Image 1 (tube, rainbow, N blue to C red):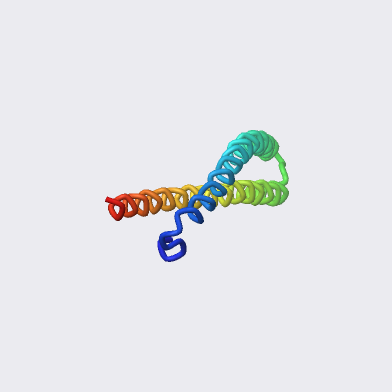
Image 2: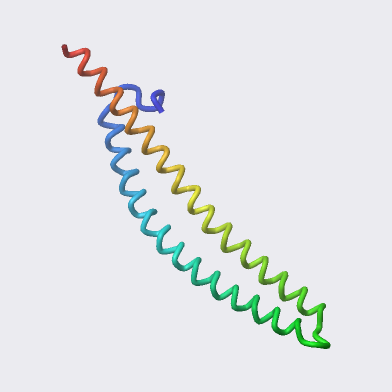
Length: 116
């Protein structure tokens, strides 16, 4: 990061401000998507309960149960993966913002030392 910005505080500040805006937007999206994810998971759990109720009955089609359960599990994996990907990107941006803030403090401290 220091190599990218050198001692150009203005460039760093502009990029930092843009990143902060992006983080705030991503935060809202992440929270919204997490709520939607929970709704989807609740729906999936209901589907799983239905599958279990059907397979518990005598003479149930175990082959259909296996196929349906596989579909449900693949769906779970998909929605978890999507939310996790969004979460990891958000976390990466938080870490970048932290690095930028630290660099800004360091450059500012160096400038103060030079001027005294």
